[in-house]
Image (cartoon, rainbow, N blue to C red; front, side, top):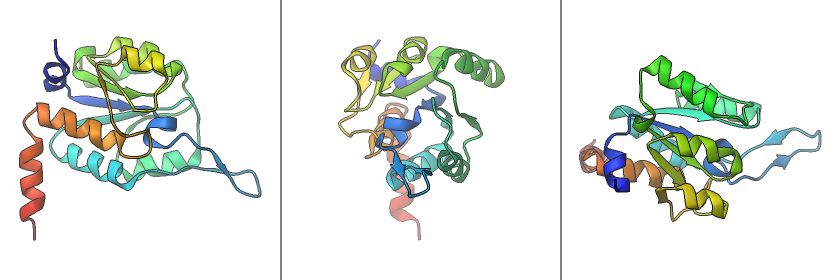
Length: 175
């Protein structure tokens, strides 16, 4: 099955955080608090995709307050921080949402994403993912994590589903 054929079946996209939604950097202030940088275009892509029925979940190996704030802004209810072992979380999501793994896309960048990527219907990697992760991926972005890779992956899925052109036309003509 081609990546485009796989993408047509996707109902839910699962995102890793560090290295996917962010550039993977950890920014510390003078008190040791961590902040993270998110891409606004990725965020708008998520909101637009939600408007045409694509659902999202986020599973992160770390638990950072800044991530929770961003996830809330994006209205993503399936947020699972502090989980380096992701397959049991995905099984739970499938059960709650009555989805098959083949209906799920997963965008990852590092070894902690490997088992999750092997489980889903459309494993995806960011451009700067580890080589082993790129080998597992059916599709790899041109953009790096935190720099538009999520938006690019969304575009790929929505284009395969025939929803992207209509979404663009809506924004082109909205007043």
